[in-house]
Structures are given as C-alpha cells and as structure tokens.
Amino acid sequence: MPHSALERLPTLHETLQIHKLRADKSLGQHFLLDLNLTRSIARLAKPLDGVNVIEIGPGPGGLTRALILEGAERVLAVEMDDRFLPPLKHIALVTDRLDIHHGDGLKVDFADALPAPRKIVANLPYNVGTKMLINWMTIRPRFWEQMVLMFQLEVAARICAQPGDNAYGRLAVLCQSVGDCRIAMEVPARLFTPPPKVDSAVVVIDPLDEPFEDLKSLGELTHACFGQRRKMMRASLKGYAKRKNIDLAAWLAAADVDPQARPETIPVETFQRLVSLVPRETKSSSST
Image 1 (cartoon, helix red, strand yellow):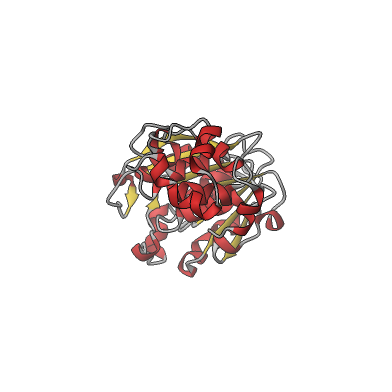
Image 2 (cartoon, one colour):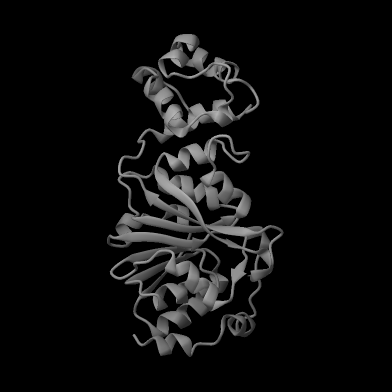
C-alpha cells in the first residue's frame, strides 16, 4: 500500500469535524491529532517490519495511521466506542493492513486474534489503563513481544519507579517483575484534544528473560505491604503472616529483610523472595 493513500486522507482534525466526533470524558478519551507526534510514538516500537500490532482505543485513528506508516505488518485496532468505527473504516479502505475489532480490549484473546510476533502500542483510556496492563502481564503464555503505552505521567512514574522514590509501590513491583520498564517520552497535556488535566508519558516495557511467574501471590503480598506504606515491614505484614500461618520474624530473616524497613525501600527482587518463601499450600489456599 503506498503511503500516499494514507496521507491523502482528511487530517485528524478534519476527521473529527466530518464525523462530528468529540471525546467522551467518562471513557477517559483524549486524542493525539498531530501525525508527527503519533509517528514518534510508533517509532518507539521499532522495528515494526513483520510485527503485528495491537492498538487499544484508537479513537479517530491518529496512532493507527502512524503505525501503518512506520511499517507495521498489521494493526488490530480494538475500539469499544462505535462512534469511531466510521473513521477507522475509512483508513481500512486505503490499506489492507488494518483490522478493526468493535469491543472491549479486556475481553479479546489476542493470541488467537493475531499471529506472533505481537506488540501492543496504545494511547490507553485513562480510566482502564493500569487494569489492562496488569491483565496483559498476568496472561500466560506471554503473547506480546513489547508494550509501548501512554499513561498519565503520575501512573507512568509509578510503573517505572525505583526503591526509595516517592512513586515506588505495588504497581512498580508487579510491572518490573515481568518487564524492563522505562519512560521513553513525556507528552504535555496541551498536545491532546481535549487537553487532560495532567501531562502524560509513554512507557516502553520489554519482557524479562526470566519473569517472576506468581504475580497473583506477589499482588497479594504487595497489597498488604503498600496498603499502609508508612508502616515498617514487620507491622505491615503481621496480618498477612497470621493468615498464612507463617512465623513472621523467621520469614523476614530468611528473606534477609530488615523488619524495621519500610516497604518503599524494599527492592523488587526481595518482594519476590518473600513470596517464594511462603509455603506452597498457604499460597494455593489463600484468596486475593
């Protein structure tokens, strides 16, 4: 498909006017209408040659166009808001590399919908972004080769935070147990239509060669730790250890954890070690 066919489409601003489209704040919609910017985001997922890309919440198709222009083999655009199906179908008329799925991105079996290799590249709706991220990280076998995702800047900081950072917490531990996470680009609020109240950032997540597999148990442990983050570890885990019938002092000592340390200072690997030292039968009998 010649790129000129895509480039002759109405601009994204014109597309909104033609279809009388406005963002629905209740769905967390904020659009990027500058194709130069969306192409910069798409390039963060390079190389795209031979790669099938999953895009959630494409809206009027700004990032969709960019992904095709930057060389994606195919793009599967998953859009729940049927108002945006007509502009997406207009893109599909000039390229055979776009598939459109009308539905909820949390309910799609992407391993079945699209052949490997797959990358997820998306400006995620603000209200479901972290839920989608954790869901994708939990699915086994892993179906993605890389994720390039837009979040609110505060959420991006929480994903990529290191021990001792103010933003460090449960989300960082879970995400960094599965992937190498970094903020690759910050996007000011003024570049969106309509502008959100906060700035955003693009997070690139590359899968670890040896991810921590028991995210369910890790999620339960970190929920206990960071639910009262200013408490010391021995206090924050007291109830957890009692439920698991674990000797708290011996457990912390075996994991080489200072009982007076605060959760926000504990490295990701140490949380993983704590989970690994929980007897298997107590893990399987517990509920999150």
